[in-house]
Image 1 (cartoon, rainbow, N blue to C red):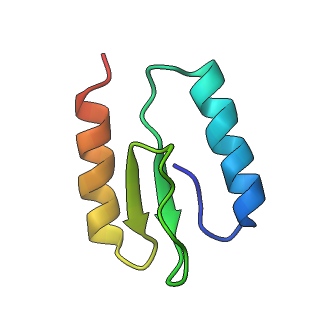
Image 2 (tube, rainbow, N blue to C red):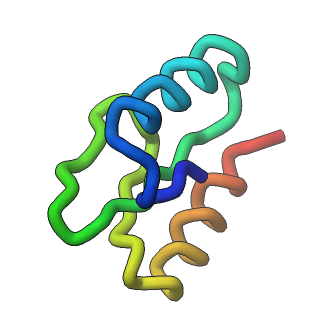
Length: 65
């Protein structure tokens, strides 16, 4: 899960790093109110909706063996 408070460039770098090193692990990005979605992640979730985080993380983990 990538947090929403870091600058966008840092989040993009983290996403790229995780994609390159942890191929099978789904990536969930939390989005601030003004953030646009990240196309490189598996899930994008509004940071101000914790119940939705739980749902998306559960969906993400369902596919991990």
